[in-house]
Image (cartoon, rainbow, N blue to C red; front, side, top):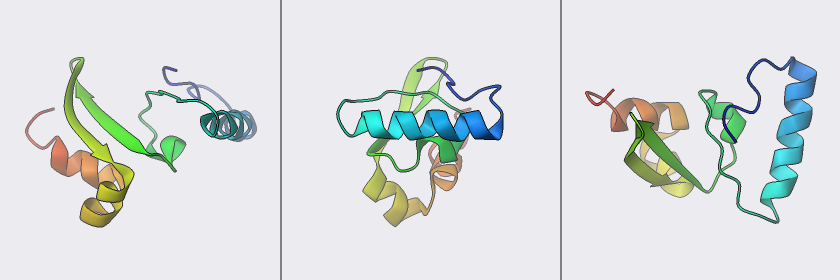
Length: 81
């Protein structure tokens, strides 16, 4: 899914994220977003630049080494984007 919550009001955004989280318990979900809270919780995050993967990080590593997805993004893409 590409930016599935873009343009949604808060109520519809919350409803859609709830559906996506329920689906993710049964199937793999791949979603692109600029809103880090949309993908929490997550198993894995891939950071892209110009269509290329610049970092592939497991959620445990994000929490342990960076503290948050936003902090990981800042550190892993510094000078790349």
